[in-house]
Image (cartoon, rainbow, N blue to C red; front, side, top):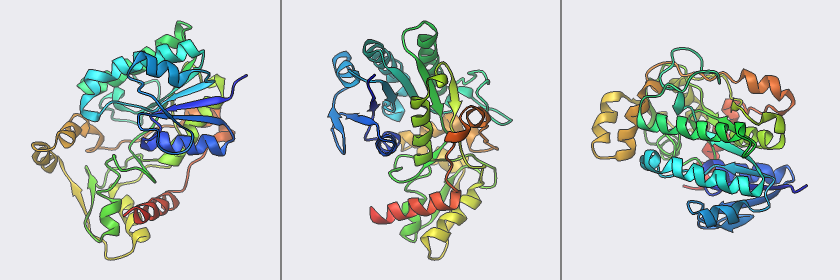
Amino acid sequence: MPDLHVVLGATGAIGRSLVAELTARGHDVRAVSRTAEGPHSFRADITTAEGAVAACAGAAVVYQCAQPPYTRWAEEFVGLTDTVLTAAEKAEARLVMADNLYMYGPVEAALHEDLPNAAAFPKGRTRARVAEMILNAHKEGRVRASLGRASDYFGPGGVNTILGPQIFAAAIAGKTARWVGEPDEPHTVAYLPDIAAGLATLGEHPKADGYAWHLPVAPPVTGTEFLELVWQAAGGRPKSASLGRGMQRLIGAFNPVVKDLGETWYQRDRAWIVDDTAFRASFPEHVRVTPLDQAIATTVAWFKQHA
């Protein structure tokens, strides 16, 4: 049986971390991107049928970590997913989707996988549709597929995230580190190498197929606590602040990405806690969660090296 693990979107933060994790586990890896950067690289445009088929050919498992630009999700994500599903089906490969939590919409309690797809905003409806497409393809016997879901992430290489440069790069430069949202509400955050480990575990275990899984995470943390750990690792005189709804609206008038954060502000103004019980119960020997202080220290070190 082939042991080729294909990572689509391999130059993104999650994709790059996943390539490293799969390589460390001893798998044969193909890292697919348009630019063919880094180890195991393979150049392909997976938005085209031909490119996606070439990228997935011979794969045992395909990890879908690619996505359109954030402001183009509603227009392009469904079409991309259809193309990837067709390519994975042709390759007779299993499919693991790197997913997020947008499809649930506003939730007042801990998030678990049995919640309905209740999002009413464009990006949330899009992510719900993408998840439904993948799980329906599994039910129809087209592909064996699973989804690994994670909250806001940070970590080495995490530069396009609200837990990225405005916190870590700012801190190492002695500037103000800014938390987006209410700083005293508990919030689940995900560490990139831990996301990669969870996705790799789904790829290695066919019993994961047919389900969405919340990947293992550390206990929730407030923004204030998170920033304190950042400053402990970065050193210097702590300077922290939060970006509230009013400032988000103001900046959003000039920045389309910040503007679109308003769609999911309910993730920022209340407790946002992920329940990962199902994964822990099903894969107890494969749960890897890095202590938060260690994860933050490693991330600070990465930003210092790349300053």
